[in-house]
Image 1 (spheres, helix red, strand yellow):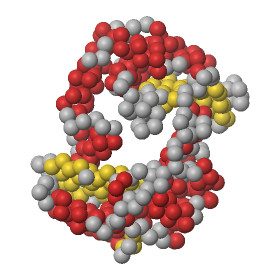
Image 2 (spheres, rainbow, N blue to C red):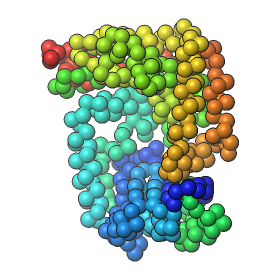
Image 3 (tube, helix red, strand yellow):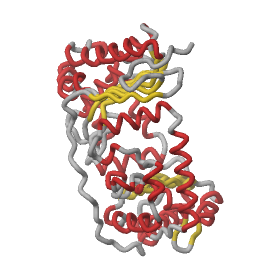
Image 4 (cartoon, one colour):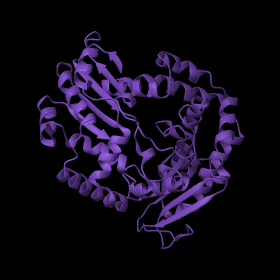
Length: 409
């Protein structure tokens, strides 16, 4: 249990994170962890989905759940109610058959809708290439065929295998009494008995050795292009140097990064462009992803110029001015990531999960400011491999990525 008292506003946020996320989905049941997470608030022992929703609505609170667990927010005076509901949802979900059918139908409709969105289609295809042989190759929500195959028994079994109080991180942030909070949590969660968690071994994965291409035809006026490969874990000691590199290459706001400044503003190639390697890093490696939304007539130039900029940051040291701007932005904006109780609760979970230390908030500026020009060049050369990119192109193209029809105006 992680508790951070925060005075000023009478609000409280809870985040309970479990172990059995989508990394442990069986191949033929992709989406199982997400489906289980969605079902947490659809009924628990002594409470129907209507009871849960009505209780939360009555106090003006919020309740959300997914493959990683459940979050809740409300007024501090309603903490006992929030704890009771969260503990019930986590420990005794009932998986009512009618709600299973409802969530399945809703999920299938969402997947079908996503199949008409080029950006989502491209992102999913990109992850299928980058994470071949690893659970992350499928979307957390699964596919229509795998979601259709999931039964109530599958949901009950997954919950029984992967949910236990001993494997759950509970973060509470807000206007709470630090002396009373332990007894309140014990009262709410005391009936949840520990059990052995059975987690499948997540297969190891390595960065691909050579290039891959997948081109998907969609009759759209824009091309969505993804380039990249396997990235790094959050625990990587070069994470902070990579954050600085990301900011210079493709994540700085206001179109100040190289990708936005050159490809969008100077060359007029992009509707939207970005590139980063740290954004999806976690317990498993994230992905280095460079993305551009562009006109079909700019397909070849866009790929060439994106690749050129990535090669350039590997080969040519960044300027002292770029380094300073990146550091100033990262350190200056850091505090704004922790303005709300829910943001702080999420941070507490991450700090524990990645062993960041109690003084991380104070140390972060130091970690960023220690990064040198040489560090940026070193990590770019070490972690970026332009010659071994997976490339996904979605739009009016054939299977080789060549234009299949004249570009529409």
